[in-house]
Length: 277
Image (cartoon, rainbow, N blue to C red; front, side):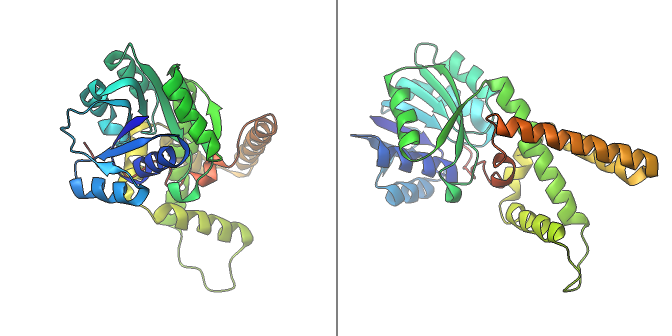
């Protein structure tokens, strides 16, 4: 299988390397706005680099660019895909629609790894818009690498990301921004746990998180809830506490019936730092 990965950032490199390692007779190429980045990615996984302007054709093209650049990249590079088009951009509704329009007669799959590449393997959200032998091989490679493939729909995925990404990041970053320095010995286990999560989130590129906030709603609800808690009297605070406890109970039941509680804590830098193309 000849595969072109457009965008040689963290997630593009992860995807290309996974296919190179787990798909038989694979020929993986990287293209990026920065040719040196493409060459480095190729060298890292035993692949090759090609220019963005290449007229070479491939069995599959994977678009691994920032969410804001996804639709334009899909339109530009879809003609290079003879059989299948894939994206790993992090959003699903718009890329799936763009792939359907740009490649109506080809296999189409949207993927969202819910983890940083350094934490792989993990859960991978999957929307199969048009299946076929090439995308089946790609999904088999993901499975062979130890990932859990979670079938979903574009709307279900994007709605979930309002909580799992936008809301979670907003809450953690707000805590980090508001927290004062605490003397040694005056911390609690909950404070230390939340500080550890904040360190994971703040140790990455701000552009990744800015893209998430610009793409998904969710931060506004966190801000509204925090304001309600700050202004509540004793009775209202108790009611808000009960609401939070009930929401946690429902979330735990959902997880026990097949959901994944790890997604909210493992996604600190789940969206790749890909170069715009």
